[in-house]
Image (cartoon, rainbow, N blue to C red; front, side, top):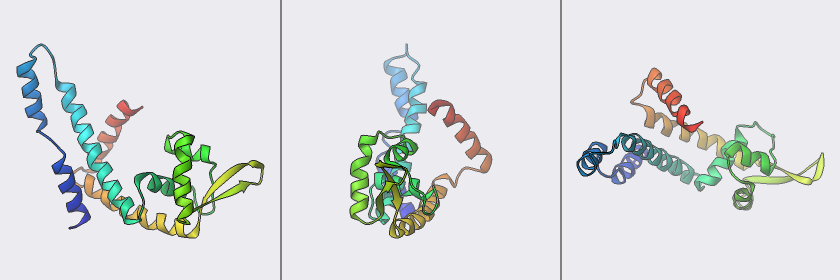
Length: 172
């Protein structure tokens, strides 16, 4: 089964009742309420589930969970040989620093990252990709973009820009 088929199959199995059906049921049961926000938020939730499932599938190709995948790609986009402190890495990923330690431990055990002493502050650490981590991240980012392109294939360029603009209004 192809990655695209797995994504569609998984998404279809978790989509639930059609949103219009849900709205009609609420309108029938509570005509005093406007359930239209449920349709928008439901569509967002379903789209998020589909995207998350696809990303997890890409991460699994590299033997990673979503968290490890995020760390590798965040470090990779900094450039070869570049480093981040755990705090900087957490900030780039919008996480707490306490959530970072276990992620880094798992990646270090696999030889994908290394912790280096900060030459400017020996109390601080810098996180860097190893050559294996860099190679894996380079490979996974190609698969990642392919999957994302498949998810967005039904949208033209203008629709993608509109969607990005609209979503940014509620995610800011």
